[in-house]
Image (cartoon, rainbow, N blue to C red; front, side):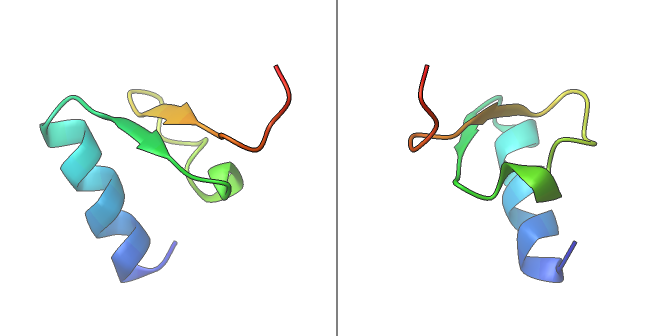
Length: 42
């Protein structure tokens, strides 16, 4: 994880936001982080 990714994840966590990204693989290990991939088929 890069510093930029860490800052984005921390911002989403602190503000109880959903992180919208196509790059979910870098963030899946953070249990409390809510992720949404808009390009993933539901």
